[in-house]
Amino acid sequence: MECTVSWTGAAGTRSGMGFVAETGSGHILAMDGAPDAGQPALGGQNLAPRPMETVLAGTGACTAYDVVLILRRGRHAVQGCSVHLTSERAGTDPKVFTRIHMHFTVSGKNLPEAAVERAIALSHEKYCSASIMLAKTAQISTSFELVSV
Image (cartoon, rainbow, N blue to C red; front, side):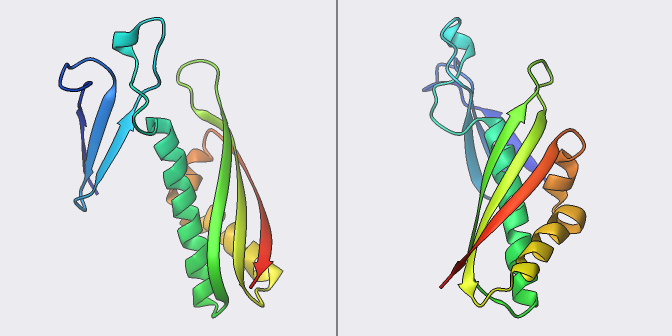
């Protein structure tokens, strides 16, 4: 896996903190820093997600992918899966994640609660490399709700 990240600056002025990542699979991801009122040239333009937001979003996608895949492999009629992530970061550099909570909403027909609970646990214990990696610095908790369709 590879990725190239390039600083874009703001509108070609080479100020600001915008970046574009080109992934090895050929996709583009824009990121930007938060505006810094104290030193505008050092802050972003708020035109894209922050880099750490993309880490959190990627982790959510990684675990949701696992949950859907595990349920499908178990021949369960999963029709939807979303995960809402909330986090806390350390107050000093490096500002690593210290707590992450993931709340899953899983919808489908006759989904057994135990199967959803097991899928989430398997993701966090065995399959989701992103959440397993973040668990080195963050306390990760999960919850879920089932929606019958």
